Length: 474
Ligand SMILES: [Zn+2]
Image (cartoon, rainbow, N blue to C red; front, side, top):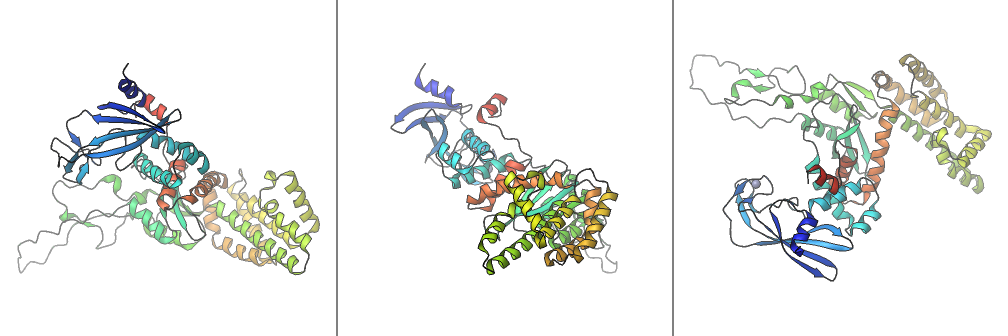
């Protein structure tokens, strides 16, 4: 077998790609390939033509999967074409995404690893930097994400996660039924939620202005027929699309009409932004408060009490006890069943000492107990009202504030329980998102961080290169 034939079999670059020459260099193998097809294909849209734009070839290089310890480089002289839509482009190749310096197989391996392992493992194993990983997963995500994933949403959760430094946020929308993240953007609050609803129900392209009818001076102008359109099923007068302006044969895509009006429940945190946006764009949906956030707030209140107590000890010069309390943080914040032996011992010491930290702990546990699985809505109502009567009398400022917040959102919390949006259901996804977001800290762009979240928690199934080839996808 000739060496070119052998490499053609080994690399599997796709139909119509011929290996011309193989060159061994000290640290890499260079495989020169050519495209057998006569037509030139636009890499963006698939438009094909026989005409070359000019005779200048474009020499391109892609990194392919390593072969043993050898780094493999694919070299190809590509022709240039003129696409009516995209202008001057270098012709597409079957083995790589447009604009990429890596083959699809290589990118597929990077994406798979990025969702499963840490930065150091990937960069060392594949010999690429983390920024490159970010750009690769962005491309894979754009390519693999199901464009129909926003259809058929009924119960969703809108939440933010802090990214990089404290004041950088990503807003994510989760589908409670499929238990995955379906949408994300940079930023938080009402604006971010508005951006989601805009993508859910995009404004149609501005219709051409109405053909001005010949003026008939004495006749009053007839009102245009309004086609209901928009997030709200009932359209106020003067809104919607003037039906008379739709061109012949032009139909609105029914899937795109008011997908927000299908939403039955939207779970959010206790800040005002997401609620305002939801009420505006999906007024029919029940707004529920994600139990996860109630427990989170209770944990924050406890941490405030603990910190104040610790600072007081320090200012009194009691360094030893102060140090013991600093270590106590996790003993207090973790669920009792998850404590290590040492943390459990610390917790017992805090209990024996009594005082405000212990009181704060029992209040936090009472808040957590509301969302134990298996409780009926009646049980939860009793527990929440009992907690609401305890909190204002707690003499702990953070817990008095917590009481006010919970009272304000009592109906939303109960709505979540009624709809089965419970703590366990959202917590698993939340924890996964937070773990992945920490891994994405090293990326420079929020887009790369979002891509990693979507690849890991979104409606995407990633395959390894050999699985793709076996399935006939690669
Ligand atoms: Zn094109």
